[in-house]
Image 1 (tube, rainbow, N blue to C red):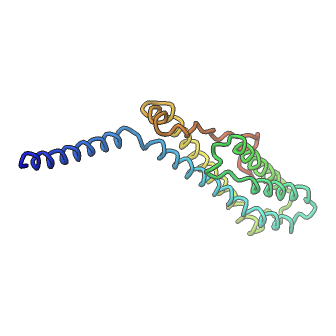
Image 2: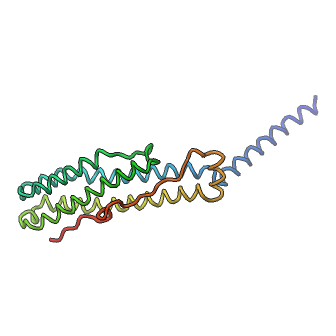
Image 3: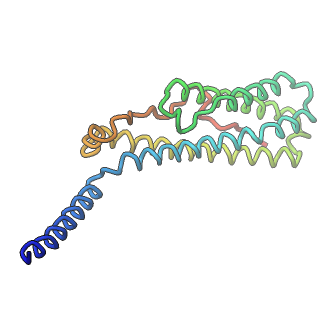
Length: 205
């Protein structure tokens, strides 16, 4: 009886040590990297959407301000409104990030809005009173700042996707992908889909 009672605590202690070693080994060998990087990709994309939404929210006020000074530019204003409507109607959330076609449609719509806003800013050059209007200047400044934020958010998203894809394709992530995360696939990275998509609206006063 004494031998049995002596062996049992020893065995329990050994099992605890073994479990601790396995846990430390798994923690240090990158088994959690893929889900971690996956969440970082989703978070980075949320920031991209957040900045695009900020830009879309500025457009109605910008259009109304320009309309008050340049009513004859209805065609350009309509193009901006339509491009905004299309851009906000296409959403790519974390659940659809693995859909390259949906991602491409989203990027194309945002590129069209960028192009329409560029044309609107060019039109504003014809109207000195508009160019000196404080409301317009404030909106233009906010829009310019938003374009910079969009560029930063897209850069962060690109980096997050690169890190995620690299983990899947290299050791030891490739092993864990095959064993535990086979449902995770390589992700499409951001690509400019229109000639104007990588250009912020420019205006010179």
